[in-house]
Image (cartoon, rainbow over all chains, first blue to last red; front, side, top):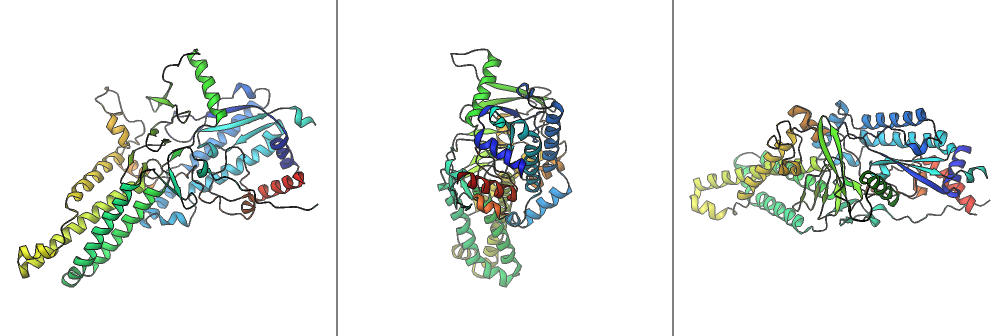
Length: 143
Length: 337
């Protein structure tokens, strides 16, 4: 509760100092992967390893969502046989993993980023194009 | 302290959508601006099937087997289902850049080009994908660098992921999210038209044995689907080729991966074999829509654990856990009071 309270404070009291955008990494094709390069604007705010750990976990989760395996094939075939009406009833594997990702980002924000005056935005809100990291001004946290 | 749970009216994402698409049923249906030809497609299919079921099915069910109208009905329902699915779903529209993001990109481009004042040259970024150099173009409308295989549809005024083509017959773009529905539509329509055509001919032949050929032809409805059979079957064949080589219509027309361009030009997205390419295109995972708010829940509904579609306004990152959102809202209400 105390952690969500500080996150709440950030959103409603702190002013936005800057925004950093982590772009997509297309070297492996159109799969959803983000660049893990540590941005210079975050050097004073957060540990490089912590940041890379977050990016790596996110990349792994997205890879899991888009994995071509037996589960996705079964889902696809079943959907085709039911003329895609089955999507109205069940949640796809992709959607399940996206929920997992949203939960992970929330958790990271609560535990790691909010105490340092940062906020990760779920890339789904940006069409899976960028991860937006908002840097809040320090002074409001010390009040 | 009294807690007031206000239902704050939020604008749904589709209500502030910047493109030229039209939305129906509270954002659940997304179509292009011009939908006249789509209604024509629907009418043609309904009329042809209607005529077939009315005039030919009884005869064929009696003379041959009653399974014929059953198969016809199944095919017809599949065609209509996939057509509606193709026409009504989000093809994979990329949301436009927020002002902050656009400004950040502009800054990076200026730094890279080192020029200000006059209009800089066309902005491109090169990336190597599986050994092939691909140019990512900057979209001046959407203010983003288009991902590989994305293209801007001038009719809908959106960038669409894995853009295939804009199809006026289905009244929508065909892209990443609805390509498999489009393919199943044209494939099933091919089967349906061939099926109807074959059995109408059978009907005429069987009838002509009794009453003569010219009489039979007069009694039978005009074979509406004769010309459409060839064009639809041809289109299905073309898209089967595209799927098996993992190309889009856009790439094929431009000859992006053609060996005629250069000796070592190849498709970096292909999985190497036809089977995997087909499976990936038709049975691969389906990403959800970022634009269409299927069910926009207010914060109160989030608290009830309603199934979330994953679309949220860009300016307010709401936690996706219902309990977290609810507690935040309570705190917010308390702080307001």
